[in-house]
Image (tube, rainbow, N blue to C red):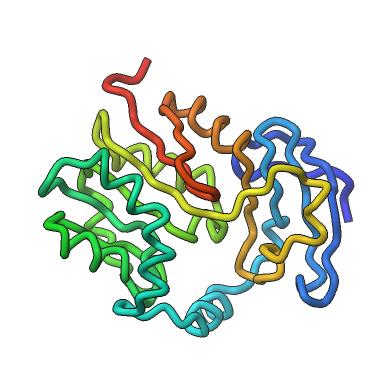
Length: 222
C-alpha cells in the first residue's frame, strides 16, 4: 500500500495514509488530503456498480415515510427560504425513493431528477437550474472533482446548491465514526473541505444545520 496517493477532489498528489478499517469498514484504506481536507478511499477499492446498486436497494427510503421526510427537511427547510416560488430545481442523486423531489413538487417547484443508478436520464444534465439538491450523495461520488464541476455547470448564476452529507470536525475521531462503515461511502468531508470547494468555484457557503451546506453561485465567475 502506498503511503501517499492523489486526492480525487483537488488532485493533490501527496494525500497521506490515515487509517485502515476493520471488517465493518471492509478493511478499506483511508487517506487524508492536506489541501482540501477530504478523507477518501483509494479509487481501486471502490465497489463495483452492481454491488453499489445492491447496497442502495437495501435502504428503506420510502417517499411517504414521515421520518425520512423529517430527515430530508434538515436541508430542505433552510434552503427553501432562499428559493423563489415555482423555480426550477434538480434533485441530483435522488436514489430509489425520491422523497425530497416529491416534497419540493408538493410546494410547487418544477423538479427534475437524476440518479446514475435509478433515474439515469442524462437529458436533465443539459438543463440549467435555479437550485440543486444533493442529499446523502456526495459521499458516494466516484469522481468528486467531476461531479462538483458538473454541478457548477448546471447551476444558474445566483442559484443555490444544497448538500447534506456527514461531516467531521476532527479527523482524530475518524476510526470511531460510524459513517465510514457503509461500503458505498468513499468521500468524507469537513467544513474546511466545503470551504475549499466554495473557494474553488467562487461560491458562497453557509452552514445552517449540522451536516448541511448551502452554496450560492456568484452572479459572474471571475
